[in-house]
Image: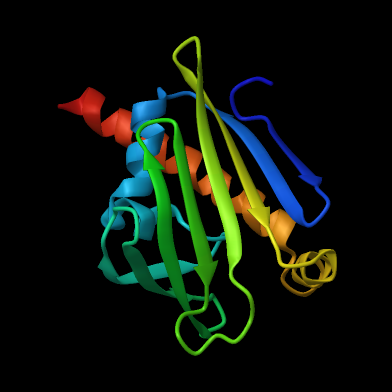
Length: 165
C-alpha cells in the first residue's frame, strides 16, 4: 500500500481498516495519546469531539462526547487496556456507564515502513450480527475510513506547523 491508500475488510466478528500515513509511528501514535489532538480528528467527517477527561494509561479512560453534524450528542467511553508506544494500542469502546451493549474491542497497530506508518485498526464486536448492525445502521466502514482520512489531514497540518517554526 502507498501513502493515502486505505483498505477495509470484514473479519469473522469485526472490521479491519488499514491506511498508510506519511509520518513515522511515533508521530502517528502521539495523535492517539493527546486529547486535544483526538478532539481535532477522531470520528467521521462533520463530527466534532469534546473531551471530558482522559487518562492515557492501562486501565485509564477517555470520556468524550461526539457531536454529530445534525446536533445529536453521543457519549463515548474508551478504556485503555494496552499501550505500547509507538507500536500498539488496545482498548474497549462503548457509550459509557449507561450503555447496555457489549463494548467493542479495538486493537490499533503502528508499523514503520521507510519512515511511514502502516496503521491497522481492528474492531471486534460481540457477534457477527452486532458487527452487521453497526455496518448497516451507522455506516461504520465509511465512518472509519473518514476518521483515518481526518487523521491524515491532522498529521499534514502538524507537519506544516513544524515546518513553519
